[in-house]
Image (spheres, rainbow, N blue to C red):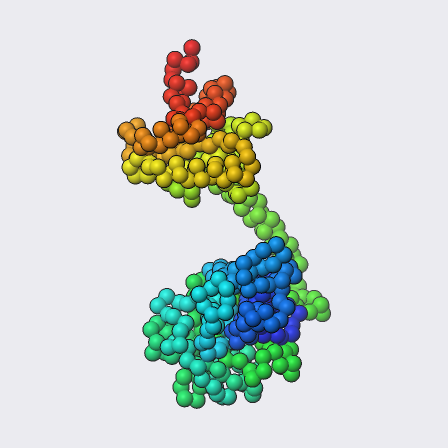
Length: 446
């Protein structure tokens, strides 16, 4: 297990020290240390351009918009906040060396930046001056000896200087937090808050952040506390431990390896079966789904089933490839009633952007799933007539998801290749509503 420490320098072979701007992706770690005071100072230096600061890939940081060879400070901070949320959502433990709340307005592109900008809060809690109150003191006492981070406190006890306390009368704080350190006056200075699927563990700092005299002790204590808090095993045993292996341990180890191999094989088979099942379910989803999260995968799967190759353009938007050259840009729209002109505007915006940047006339298909909660055989009006008129006038295809499903279903049942080829041709070349019904009728069986 590796620990990422931002702004609080410690020493340990499994610990990575960085500042908030040059750190790698925070979400890649499940054990993280944040020194809010040092981070605040780094951000202020970057905003004032009083120091040369770079990203993890050595791109200079500027207090403005990102341009070639420069990274925007505001964008980095927003990204860091998103990474911390993702880390907590993944179950991370984040040790936070707390400071009093403070803010300034010098970051271009942010309405304001405060010391707790990066941190999400538990439900019902706000990281404001009422919750986090400025204070200073040099002593504290342990009130929960079972908490894993007490061992970190024992390292810094003699050099302690807390700079903030938590107001347990503030909304949500008393119920959400587990207090393990208190100041002599009873105020909480060490609190563990469950946030999303992880934890924010707040502690006071030593007088001098990263003091060399305790850097090694702090590193070891933080590693051990993180292991206990996350329920992870200790580091690998030393080499000499093999001299004391109990009889039969190698046989047991081999048995575990065989069982793991069998499990991996079974998991691979399960994954493949689930993937195959999901592909089949996608066909059916085209009859009722709505939006890019559900309807789009179903439509793309149906397109592949009838013989299109699915690709993505430079913006990541989906296309049906008709032969080696023709790309048909796909936009989907579902509605409980008839699909309106909003879907048309989405497709036209995408096609117009291609015309502006590449000076070509692109093809498009709007796949609509109107009246999506009505039985497919009972749907009367899946899209407004204005959508048809717009498609005919501006040169793109409109196709109902239910018709696309019927052709994909027929392809699974053995619809001849020439009819599938004709279906693809119509979708790729029609200006207006695509008609596919005749490809499925019995008259074509003759």
